[in-house]
Amino acid sequence: MGKDGSVSDKESNAMSEDASVNTDAVVWPDPWSAERTVRRMQIKLHRWAGEDSSRRFGDLFNLVCDPAFLVDAWERVASNAGAKTPGIDRATVARIETRIGVEAFLEEIRRSLKSSEFQPVEVRQVMIPKASGKLRKLGIPTVADRVVQASLKAVLEPIFEADFLPCSYGFRPGRRAHDAIAEIHHLASAPINYRWVLEADIKACFDEIDHTALMGRLRVRIKDKKVGALVRAFLKAGVMTTNGEREATFAGTPQGGILSPLLANIALSTLDEYFDQQWEELMGTNYKREKRRKNGLANWRLVRYADDFVVMLTGERHDAEGLREQVADVLAPLGLRLSPEKTRVVHIDEGFDFLGFHIRRMRKRGTQKYYVYTMPSKKAVQSIKDKVKTKTHRSTLYQDLDELILSLNRMLRGWANYFRHGVSKDVFNAIDSFTWRCVANWIFRKHSRLSRQEMRRRFCLPGTWKITYNGREFTGAASVKVIRYRYRGHTIPNAWTVPEPAAATTGG
Image (cartoon, rainbow, N blue to C red; front, side):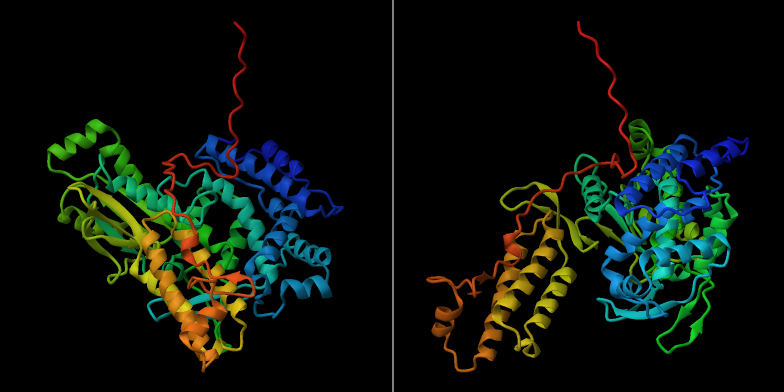
């Protein structure tokens, strides 16, 4: 390794030879072999990055162009739910498979990358309604751009994952929203008792990240100029609006792109590092934290999921308000600002919503003890009720009842699986009761002259009011068992964490 922490020529060649990227003859591996090759290389990149935090990586562009990385990227794009969604060229995965052929398609991408002719095109803008009634802008890249982004992400992610801190949970391999909720529950509960919460949201984060600041963060680890130029090209690709007009992108990473969440995390890790540095310098030991408490000073921890985050702290309300100013100062160089309407200071006894859950400390029924509870938020409950109403609207009367039951069961089971780790049983039962009434009304609209008893005889299990038809029974959300989520702390492994081999033991 060079004196500046960069990858030496010998190491660069070893990286290239390991991935077979410098050979002229292209051998396209099968998906299984490609996945194994990519994972082996990712484990090495992750290990090298973890062993030396100052190391800068060169000769990564050859990996982006490598047949194994491109095949693996294609498999990820083709298996994604958005495979049927085209970009501005109207090409879908199915169309490419039938008209062009996968190998020919990937060969053209590889040729254009290696000849420096590849140029991302504008993303196709679509507007998605938000729960607030506003619209969210999504940018849909072409399939070719998605494949290159997936390959680029496969190279960059294991490197930056070695730097990302445990307080970050969003869009990271092996981490879930439930881990963030469990961390908040852990901090708010005894004996830690962080009672004040700065609940924050970054305004239009994906639209306003400063490109210069982001590229500066990227260059801390990546010295390969071709990789940097490719990332910048995706950032500057532009947007084709719903009116058919091209808009230049001077800031932001369009939501909908495969690379965007990783780039956002690279930028927002500035916030993680700021709070981590404070923690290590001021609050890193029990002695330091206890001393601060005795002196009337606050202690705090950050929990971030993408652009949504909370700061949990001891102390008083004014301590949390002071942190709001600090956060704003950290975000400003990134071109970001807090959303005034979504950023507030609350006490844990008031409760707050985060990632669909409502988190609040309350007295346990029948006792004088207080505990922190997590449950589906009112917003999340209303959202699923609205979806049930849509599925049981009079416009769906053309369906058979068993089709409706199947659709509702799948939707409610998926919703309940997300919230199964909260205090959710009563909510699940309430949702099922609401859904039962909607389905019953749907049946009466479909069969206008049906009496209540006739409805029970024809569409319910004998002797019960459980709706069933053609062997399909309505089970709903309550069929999902509520279980406690296992708190994993700060030791959450990722896909490239290879356990150390066990030490040999001798008899004796």
